[in-house]
Image (cartoon, rainbow over the protein chains, first blue to last red):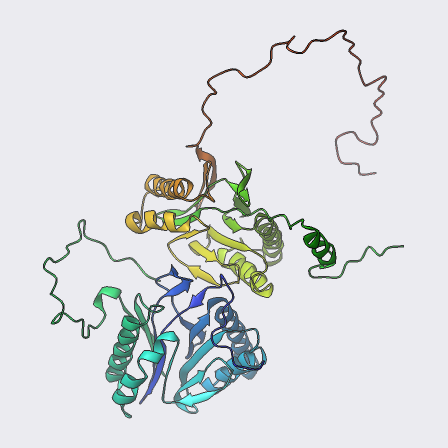
Length: 240
Length: 272
């Protein structure tokens, strides 16, 4: 290949447009993603779960081709289960990330997958690994990915601080994703987050109508005159 | 002597012939595509699947009443959109493998098993098998509904639509689906969604098929609604005997003599 191809999705392939991120804090990691999957301009799934379990304390965030990343995550999940049984102990986050890297690098011509691996292990504690399109492995204190990430590099660089606790990190992830979803057409829907610590994994969910609001231009454009009241009342859907 | 062994994978030896034809001005015939509107929806007791019944070959309707809801196991069914041959053979293969798997594990088959088999096969063929499926069923772990795209990605949702009429059907679902509906409400919703596809999408048409799957029992409702029955023709277009003049008439039976010898055990299986 003479040039690096960016986001080469075949026609008809389902695309995880996406905004994903993972941030390390004192005793764990917070990972988050939007919930939109698109096929061209149609939203195939508006409540996708892009935070995929590969092991008890290791999750991955998926961006790029839905088929490719689901297949890769399934293979890694299988591999880590086997490793747990053969070694008798939990695999480290670095091991999981290395398996992802091997698959992404060795099949780079046929895959379109940008993955962020994050989790907790007892050797190192919390860690975040970014595996972009070419299949390189980069350990970072915080990582963002997907098409929506390009709009929030500035916000993240300006806001991130070392030494945060759980709640501040969750706020950071939530605000970053909300900003990315507001500007990127391929990201949207709801925010899903996981907080992974030694104790366990806590799932958080923010529905689309409760996203943090930023500048909406209401001072410049006229504020809405009528408030929309849904009739009958819409009951929230049970989400798995 | 020609070998009867054929190597695994696709056989591309006809491409030479196809290229020759294309040069001579004879284009490849379009594979039968099911155009299609297929849907699935979760309700209080299980799953309702729905499909239209039109199969197209380019702009022509090849089959006005085809069956798009395929059997996987007794408690699992799969609607197929995309290339008709691909959906037919893929679902038949997985159905066969599911039965073998169930016998081998000694357990009732599960929807996730069928989903995993389908997605791994479609991913292996990198989208060349044009099968877009709505897989639904009720197993020991409860009711499940999945959508599977030709490249092998899957989504697990409470209501799904696929095919060229999916946008029309999804509009119906998005405005009217509620959790924990009754069987009657769910069936009405599915029928409305399929009809939206039938009347607003050119690739879908004819009748509505449905299938209701619950923990105890699966019911196939073939042609549950037929909103496109042909009206009675206004006139009789037959030709009266004598329209064409004839001079003489001779009727011959083509069977001169017939002798039937029953071999073996007749219709029963021959175990000799």
